[in-house]
Length: 195
Image (cartoon, rainbow, N blue to C red; front, side, top):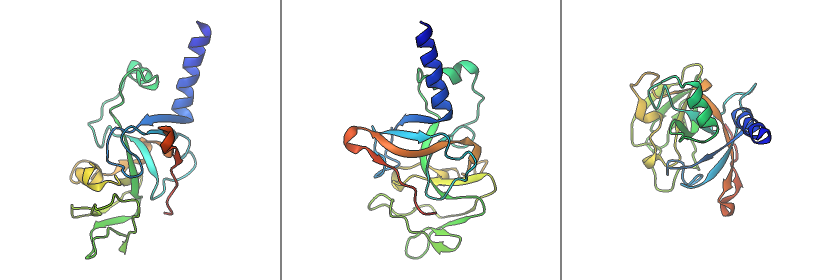
């Protein structure tokens, strides 16, 4: 019994501090990530480092995508042990970081990042960069995120006008997606884009 308790505690500590595993449940990050994929997340990616444009991240949507509520200790433990669902975590791509101005769109349909057309080879085939016109300047401590399958993604664009203006607080980022590990025939690293 003691060994099982020790193993459970070790699993919680590893998943909370080093690496974690998530299942993809939506189409919002296709073609990179598809429903049913299992992904590994580096929980140490941003300790001492900055979030970069192009990073695919997992973040806690409470306080931005969802109303904020403070979880109690039991809720936190059950989530860490994966004994309850985790419907507050999201996977998106960082498009703009603090100080950036992002705008949709130029005459050719490209997003403009700091006035320059943004090359986005990862966007789902046939999707526009965005069908929602916007201009947003990202404040310190926040990032702008979007799904790669733009027509199937609720992301920062959907929260324009909400508190925070659609931006995600950097301290709500749980880690960077490093690889697809399941199913086996889809195993692959998730490369970092230049950004």
